[in-house]
Length: 278
Image (cartoon, rainbow, N blue to C red):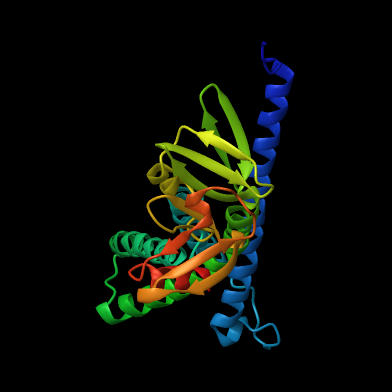
């Protein structure tokens, strides 16, 4: 069976859509930059208040803050692309978002200090350390707000994608099957073969190991219960406390397999499991 190759017109259309989305992406950011700069400069001094008798539009401050916003936007965009590729494509969690924000602010610090030195040299001035520090702190505060405004929606969409719409390609010999996370009950190993169990009870054998799957899937939804099985959070029907601080789980689907029928959480994994499940 041959697979139809995309036509040249199709490739051009896809390329046009990608370019349009990219242009719209930066247009939205330009609007945020402009509004942010306008508000900031009109609140900066009394003369800039719209109701002031001596009001004049803060042209210099507006242009300078636009330039600063563009620099911050470029730094944040490059860092976001890195985090999206390395971290957010798998899962979006608080710790990763904090690291993204912290690293972005760190890069802004690295940009701010040399930039101020260059400006001082060009202007023939010398800024005192106190004012340099105050300016840096204000820049970081405003950068935090700006980056939050720019990427809140992107992060939310990535979070929804990683939880609801994410899918995994199951490789089994020459066959490849795409399954969404919501359709997966669990993964288990039997006779050195790893199987995927779907919500309707059907199984698909895979070429993965459980360790490989554990690295690929979202650990907000999946948990490695023991050496034999990885379970989906929504698949758990009942949790029972048994001897020696262990837990016994019953899944919603009834599968005739020892690895699934008796899912035991050891007392060493009990706290991690309950933290994940709750």
